[in-house]
Length: 309
Image (cartoon, rainbow, N blue to C red; front, side, top):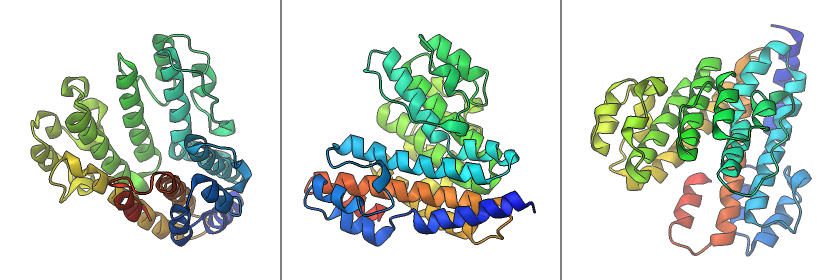
């Protein structure tokens, strides 16, 4: 147990306690009469630093994410150097978002302001200058992301998300079941909702799901083919139209697991992993609540909100 890990554990617990909005407040946020009212409420919350009343929904949701990234960068400064790989893997969603924005730009979308990653950056400094998808793949292949192997923007995006799950499981075995469950949800959605060709998803690219799933031709058989540490995420789900319920349950389990990890000894890396998990869960809940405040009355919105908060 090093002094730096103890200090990092103390900081991690403080972040989880002081920088989260919480379930009750998120419910009140979602009940706001308008996005403007919701932003006023958030202006009195731990998310106030990144927010402005002039923001639209997408901008406000991105600001929520940016606030959580700032918390993670602060946490990185309290941890010893050997913890950086762990934190980079857990926080890789932000680099993933930058990479997906770059992929979209190379496909013709407008250039988007990237998240400021600081020490949490891995492949982004080089990938940010890529002028073709092939250059981007080369930058990724030379990093811990590995070659995402996709030939299209959509294929690259799927490959990156699967690579993130692998990295998280490798760096933090404490969240392996969460990473495997996320893989199961992603692959199920791509195969049975989006219609992604199964031939483009080699089992070797999805080691957390084993081998048998690639031969499944129906959703039910896909679920049956999953190993236990991934299959839990889809247990009881009868078809792809219910995947949103499975995703809500995945977030519930994230929060439960994060709380359990946070109770470990202060010198334990589990405290840090737990705090990062809880910060992500809270940001997801706030983003969902903002969506509900804007789209209240639309079919399905309230069900999704109820599942999130």
